[in-house]
Length: 197
Image (cartoon, rainbow, N blue to C red; front, side):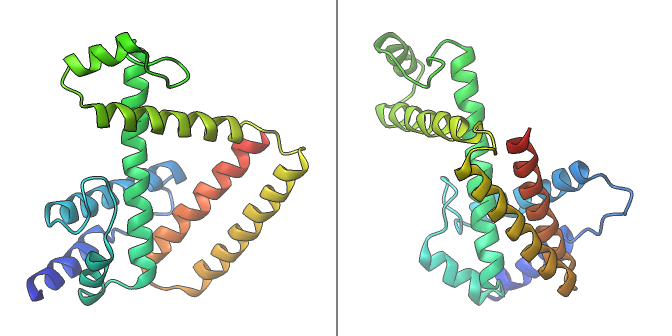
């Protein structure tokens, strides 16, 4: 356990790169995501994070014992899921582009047979189809204009979240936490801008 604690502390120091003021928001996001990918890949190698990106409760205990606080564990879990979802989106787009999946995320019998012949299992095909349906539903929900009363409420909630995160950012001195809070704020602003457009 001691070796893991030392490694975690080294990881935190190594990935706690302070960014200059001249870095753009997008560059900062990309650098932060690269740091998260490295941390997550390392923890997957150590079998702390499962291959599907989840963290089992007993693994969270190991992280806590290694010096991670609850906020960092929650952020790690969220980032891990975000990275896995991005991989699924890429896979889904590649399947659609290759003709192995319909534009709506459905897989017909011929497409299924082709995927099976390419080495996919029934479980993998079912999972990619399920995730494609979820992605399509989320995409259609995200395309609703904010003049809809439900979306006006969502915009208000996002603005309130941004204000709370900015207040937390003003109070924290830890650069790692500051980077994470800035990323969250940027993501919420992007979501707000995309929905308003």
